[in-house]
Length: 136
Length: 151
Image (cartoon, rainbow over all chains, first blue to last red; front, side, top):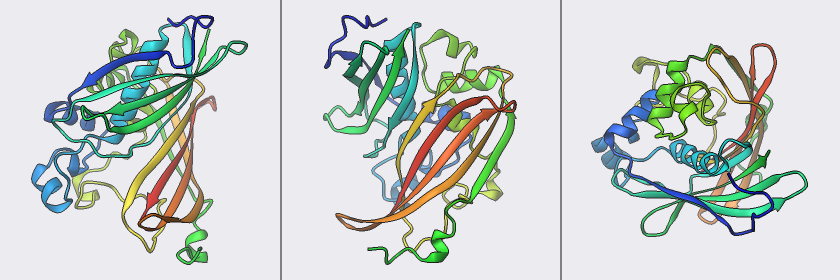
């Protein structure tokens, strides 16, 4: 649980790595009822759509960013606003790391803004995001 | 500027679509939580849904004969545009309350804007949607602004 009075701009939030594979992407797309072939049909994805490999869902990476925020926040705060955009495709076999830092702190209202990212091992950001939370 | 968008395309602004009511089950939350590799116990138990659970909940449940060759459903709120390559632009969500098992959820999505911009590689069309999610009793759950970019 972050301490509102100790927080500084630039403080990091915890990083976590994910290595999505065929099984984990299958489970995700089954759970959201998504049959888009670029997430499981490799010959179609590379041959017809011209991707490098089976594509990791953009909203799944958005979900990971909410996990980054909520795990940092703990039990005594809430997520008020969240935004992300998928800028680059990532593929099965990529190791993707989520993280971020504190961008603004309003000690009166208890609101904190976080800047977030999903990045590849090469350091490219695939999905930038931001969140506004309220510490209680 | 403004050469691609006809009055006919702009007439789609204001059209909307409703979803639900859908009753949320603990098992459905648990499936989503496990599939997204959550580590927070109340999500894994299905006591409360992770924020992005709403994305899956509002997807249409369609079979193979109702999907296009790429496995996707046609979006009834995407007007016929002179450009065809659609990219997810971005999304901004505002959360009012969490979803729990037993909640009956409804939503309305409205096409709120269509505009054109000159991109680095040519013209881009931006299509903006507002999504409002609430319980059947009218309690606000979340609002979302979605942008699709077509090039």
